[in-house]
Amino acid sequence: MLNKHRWLAAGAAAVVVVGGGIAVTRMATTDPAPRKCPTLHVSKGWYGENRAKLQKVINERGSCSGSGGAKPVATFDWDNTVVKNDISDATLAWMLRHDKVLRPTSWKATNKWLTDDAHRALTKACGTSVRPGHPLPTSTDTGCTDEILDVYQDEKTSDGKTAFAGEWNHRRTVPSYVWITQLFGGRTPEQLTALARQARTENLAAPIGKEQKVGTHTMPGYVRYYDQQRDLIHTLQKAGFDVYIVSASSEPVVRAWAPGVGIDRDHVIGIRNTVRDGRLTNGVQGCGDVKDTHGEVLTYMDGKRCWINQEIYHVKGAKAWQQQDPAHRPALAAGDAETDVTFVGDATGVHLALNRNKTELTCRAYDNSDGRWIVNPMFIEPDKRQSAPYPCSTAGYVHPDGKLGPVHRPDGSVIPDQKDKVY
Image (cartoon, rainbow, N blue to C red; front, side, top):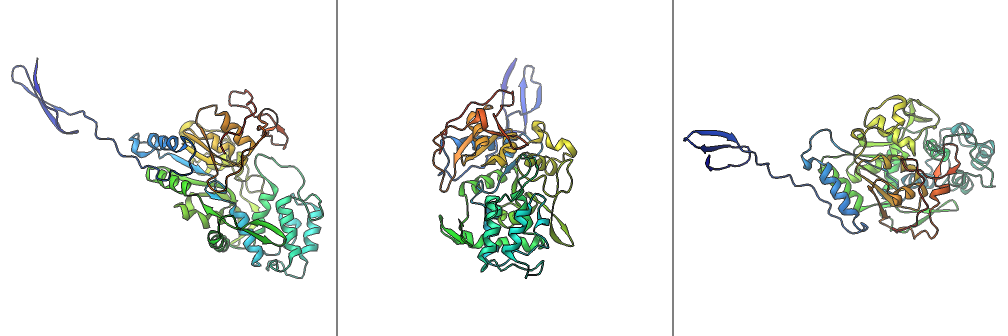
């Protein structure tokens, strides 16, 4: 019969006196005090219980949980997810205003989908007096600047003709997204990063809401880091998460911005143009079973899943396009548009969607079939509520051929139309 016992501090030996005076030494089993999890500090801007739900995933998946094993992963889109506005647009605008876009040997050769009409329009507008590889005078040549922006932004020439044509997988690439990286060609990756830093300085100094004239086009003239996302990223890192940026912007451009939230170059995955003789070319690196290409595969939609699987989890070949087992998927993922829908949906802990009224992402987020989706308004200048329901049941899903159809849940059922509730 046990007469007396005393338990010492966790991990220390305890002496238990039992009947007959025999002393038996045992190890105490009291668990050590749980580690304190890093906590989110910024509360303003988070909708409803979103901040608490994010904290819960940090507590459950981070190193403070004491679960051990591989480091959990968090993946973030960049433009309009970590920052307000688009850094590719900001960089292109700055380069056009400062004569930093180099004339290509042939506009037609820049992009496999560029039409003959676009080639002729660009050649006429920008002329042939500047030698290939030298800067175009776009700060003063409004016609050239406008034609470049018409082709990029509207995917049409200034006289309304189609700028890109042909076939492409609409869940893997967008020709105009490819083309902007090709406009950055001819420079070394380091030179492009340096130019992007100058654009960054200008856009961070500009007041919120500022617009700028580029040619005759009006474009956003400022960019801001979201304080809420910077806080989230830093907290995740403190909690032992491996945090990556996965962006459909040019990787050298993202590298100019990522240090502002504590992300180093090894944790940036963007569009990677091939390099020849140290300079960026029109070629774009492929993913999975698709090798170096002309841009058939980008960090875009399903392509973001492929790049995450390939670069973070080292999944090779065609398998990189497939959803992996839970141990080889991010715990947290954040995005704002259709370009992010696949990788954000792959997250096992929480799917964070910033509401920009993008149909497929918002359909999945509001349907919340697994109970892990959270929707938050943009933290700066949020979009107004969309009055009409999102057409999830008829035209919310983008098929590879570009046609629209119903959005399906993982079990095959159709997501009904959703009303905009978080704005």
